[in-house]
Structure formats: structure tokens, C-alpha cells
Image (cartoon, rainbow, N blue to C red; front, side, top):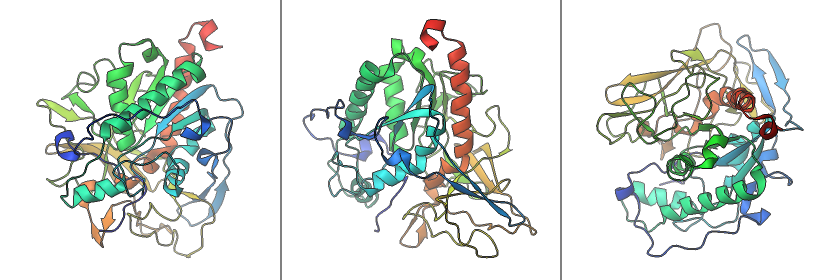
Length: 390
């Protein structure tokens, strides 16, 4: 089986996922800058070029230049998905090209508004995931990955936060870790008042059917309006014409009476909407099919990202027992842009439909997520005492 890269997360039932190592290892010292993938004050992966080529339906192009804010008013705490190519079940604490690439792909754009903190952590690796997908037993320590992120969060709160609002951002394995962090270490503690929002696509968050809180989170509801703060955006994405098959682990939760949360970043209150997508110009990573030409003229794209206004719509949908974000490509005969958007997980030439569009969970609505973080941060700041907001 070929290696799978960039955004494929480890979303497996705990009992079936990995055998645990017998004794916990000490967490890294997050007082050391080298144990952070991204943090303010150093040039890192989150400073990577975020420029995008805008391609309109008539084939015309322009370039959207990106610049990070010089005066961020809030913070973003990002936990990356399963990307490590280390040969061991748990990764080391050295950032490889894969960790740097995914941070640039998923976290760098949030620097438009916030300071980005992203800890390195000893995640369960792609090596372990591949073995699991082949039915092999794997001795990996998922709890160690969580402990590392928890230690980084504690370090950030103690020495970097200073009462600033925080947006928690993750994907896949990173989202699962943040889900546990909120449930076990944030809800009911003084740090809960610091949370602007929790943006965790690519993992299943349980909520009671018809309700917005009460499952995995006891006091953190789903976001239903850009004025909501201290809330969660969670979804898993599938093509509208290829819903989750029976063997999918995404869009379903095991708890009786619960469903997987779905919040559409492009329409928090529900319904379908055109999404503000930022797609990788060269595709969605090694796990996906290669991206072909973006327009009928075959012109090359020289920026890292592409925007295709009006081409992609999203809507939260229920099909049987599955709840998910349905992604539609609004193809028209007169549109000179591609009608083929990659993002499916492809292994050995076979599309794994049970993974849906996992590789582009974030890119399909990246612009919506970034703008939402800023809108919610403004609301959060307006609710703070004057002394705390300064």
C-alpha cells in the first residue's frame, strides 16, 4: 500500500485502533521554541506563501495577494492531522516536509487575523495508519499524542495567552485531540472563557439528535451564527453524489440517540451556500489523484492556491445514519474552469469512498473558516471587560 499524505487522519474506534504502550513518556518541554511547528517570533511553516490565483467562470484570472496582520488581536491554536512519515508508530519531535506542508496548507491563512501557535506532537503516524488499514496490530500510544498537545496548551496558557481570545483549529487526528482537550481540560475551567470558537473538521462530534449540545461536549454548543462564541464548527465532507458508504467511519457516532454534528461554515444556520474555497494549486497531496488543468486553456497556475468563485457549494445533509457536509461542483457547460476537483483518498488506483473528501475538509471552506474566526473574535472581544480586552 502506498503512503498516504496530507490530511488523512486517524479516526478509529479506540478499542480497535492501537495497542497502547505500557508506560507514559514525559511530554516535551514546550518552553523550547524548537518544539513548536509554528509560533510567533520565528519564521516557520505558517509563514509560507498563501497567494491564490482567482479563476472566474469565463476563464479570466487575477492574483489575490496574501498578507498576515501586523497587529493580531487574538490567537489561533492549531493541531495538525495525521501526516508524519516517520517509520515508527508514534512520530518524533522533528518537523519533516510533511508537517511543514500541512501547516502551510491548513494553518497559514489564519495568520490573516491571528497569531498562530502549532505544537509539534508525537502523533500516531501514517505508518501506523497504513498497518491498521491492512489489519495489522500496531503498538502506538494515542494517549501520548494527547498528553503532548495538553502540555503545549498548558504552556501556552501560562506564558503566551495573557487573557487573549483563542480559536482552536484542527483537522482529523488533530481535531480528535482538540475534541478531547475541550471535553477534558477546558470545559468547566477558567480557560473556557478564553475560547472564541473550536473549528474541528474531519472528526465526528456527537450531539443529541435535533440538539446542539449534550454529547461529546457538555457546555460547548455548535455554532449557528457568526455572533456565537465559545462554540464548535465540526463536519466531515463527502461529494454530494457519493454519500458515505456503509463502511464509513465518518459522519456517524456510536452513542445511541446521538448523531454526528454538521455545521456548514458557508451557512452556519443551515441550508446550501456557495463556499469560499482555497484549493491547492497542485492538488490535495499524495493520497489524491493528481490535479489536472484548472481551465480549458490549460494555462499553468504559479501561486500555491486557487480560488474558483461560485464553483463549489456545501450543505449539511443526512443520508440514512450518516450526517455530513455534501460538496457540489456547480458545473455549467459555459464554465471554462475544470469540473474535476480532487480530494478523494486514492490508494493503489482505488478511491476509498468511505473517506469522502477528507483531504479537502478544510480547503473547501477555508475562506469561510478564516473570516468566521475574525468575526467571532470581534464579538468575543466586545463581551470582555475593558481591562481584559486591552
